[in-house]
Length: 381
Image (cartoon, rainbow, N blue to C red):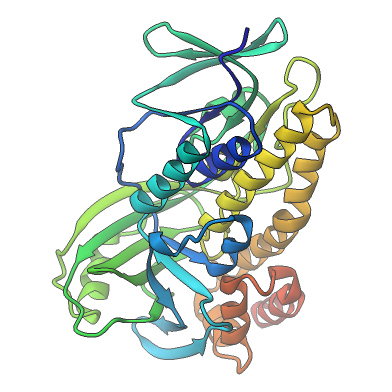
């Protein structure tokens, strides 16, 4: 007999979202998290407010700041400012707060959350998934959602997600600061980082700052970058604690569901599914989207709808992957020719507003990509 209908591995944004929606549908859910409560996670914490539509409860208690405009700069100069569309288009959250908030909602809906549980093995036997834990214990369920983040090894070993994940190297800095006035502007700086950019998002009581390199896996000289960026925000150059990490960025269309009888009932979601935006590093929106869709798919499958698992992969491809395919092409050209990209891709009259619409979820990269790439390629030639 199974311990639950579904085991969700990882209680981050994707896993907690999946656990909530499954429990709300009446499924028994075990939500397993390797870390303890309140774990810190390298993440800028920006997400489109449009994610609210996937939840029946308000997400605003977990939101630190509402962003209403974005400011782009080249080497901290030549600024371009764009207003974001809508009443509340872009939110800043702290991941420890958001993840715990979603996990609490899952528990309220009936899921069981276990912290400090390290999953080391996953195998389907006798019609059930057997989840092996560090220490020798084994749990079982009809279905499994792998949502254990960018460092996931479970996903690749079971043929879901990218077989050869591609990563962006990142350094995240959380800085405590008493902002005299609430700042509603997100900052994107493109000139200081070779093959990447840095960001600075205001949040409650300080800043969430990061440096990302998106071509190759060579980490930027983050200390030199931060020594220039932090003072521009009125902060000491050595402020904050540095956390080094990797973003598992989108790098092609791959099945996100287990195929064949030996892998049925298995889905991958969130960072483990390599969904992070390869151009602007947005990871929270696809994490929440995939967690909600994974729950819907598994609920259908448990109810006898065999095609629902394949439909999960197809829907994520259509609703996210098609845009990311264009985002990857833009990134490959832009980050190899960043100064040209800034002049032709950011400083054009309509460009900042288009990027703002992408950040808010109103547009996808496919809506702008062909013109942007043609412009950049022509300049290179």
